[in-house]
Length: 359
Ligand code: PMP
Image (tube, helix red, strand yellow):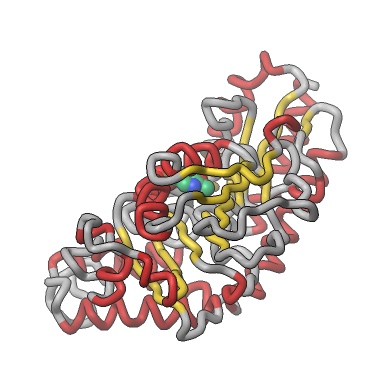
């Protein structure tokens, strides 16, 4: 068996140590005689896994008791609707920042629940930059301010939050746990697991407790944040195996030195890759350097007729899934926490070699 460097945007590479641990525990979890997949979600064993995942995430992100951690199903796309359904109840309007494809999708769903004011957008700049937050006109009566902190497709990341009295709701699907943040600045953080946390099938929601009062009883029960919180995310059967894997990834991250340590590594990885792109006229990245994503690095070849060959040769060199999103083309290297520096070095050396032969 040989594992390759996997640059997929999601479901993405998981730490090899985590996969090995899951493999070792697959048939018999801690002497239970069954796999985690085969146990009741109400068993004391699974309850201990859920509690461990919550405790580790709280430690890793320094989450205070003012927040609830929820594990929800349906993907971040479901949350695009579920969030306004819960948090905009009783409000006429919601404010959204628009920085790319995932913002657009979130806005489209939110419009089904309330009037959406797009208070800042970089659409006219082709989503190559983050809009200026210094002059935002935000309706103080709107339910919350939503932003997508890392645009996975465009490769654009917001590093500084806007100033506002509204609760900030942030889609951190592709950058959660990649750098230190101050959770107390947010009303809610949410993230699909399949990039930096674990397998697809579970989303992590970190919700400030006072916002739970907004959820109305008319919501479908499994959509209701307050009911989810009151039932420890176990209104019905949760995605048990995905939560177990998330706990193993959190454990791995603690062993790496936590978020501060992985952030340092992520900065070094991203800087090395962007430097290699910038040093060549064969490759380019269009994003305003201040807002380049540390997690998703899109780049194009000066001659796009070489795209297919680049993909073919990179796959043969053990560098998997470098094709850009189907809506933008070009290449994209997703370099989440589980991507080691060696993977970045292998990619850079392949890029040099490809340029030498075809440039
Ligand atoms: N938000 C962002 C930033 C994403 O990258 C994605 C998925 N790539 C989503 C939301 C949607 O996630 P899901 O496919 O789990 O619904």
